[in-house]
Image 1: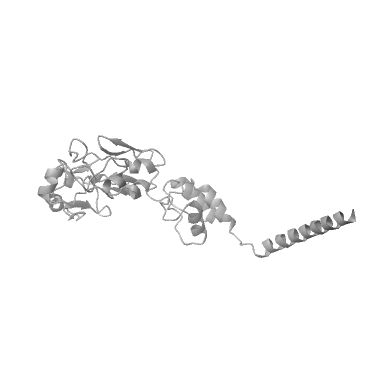
Image 2: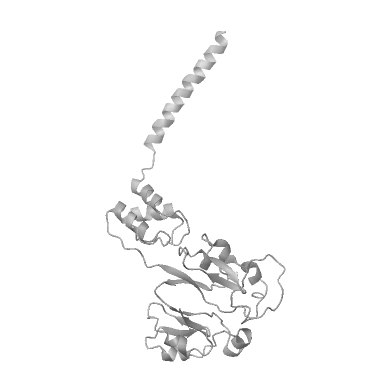
Length: 262
């Protein structure tokens, strides 16, 4: 009988000793974290969108506490999150200006035509690998919804062959911009009202053949802008939103209707 009891007692004693040892070591080698990090992380919306430039909400919270990041970078959280973070950190914080995504393309089914039918995986990134896409303009919206697939709020749909963005529910995470293989989506201040809806890099003659709404790089918009807020890059007009005051003169001057004022 004793031959069974002694081993059991020894194992119990060893278990208790190892348990105590592990507890002591965990205390000694524990990494101390600032309680504010967890509080800030909990105050963020938890979208982990990366729009702030950090890997996720926890990473951004850690950067704030370590004073490596501004406290108003969370677009989805907006003013409410900024106010809570400011209260935790004991500082006054103003919310960053809301940004909305803009699709720099107007090449829907009424303006462009399909060159061939794509039978592969129905994603924009897959279609892009085949001759730049199925449309007559290889620089335009591919219309297969990669941007819609990553939108956490369902703000994007495909209408008449191109992406349509509902900015009212948008949280400005920027995932749609990252997903677009043609880099057609840009986040800009909600206060700006003028946009160039074309990203064609073709010369004027080729752009006209590819799309009825294409920018042909004529430069009329550049001449009429008194602030130098618009220029021709890669054969299409590009707006410098830092300079633009949304006067709309460029939109009125555009002979192709590729510049609009909302």
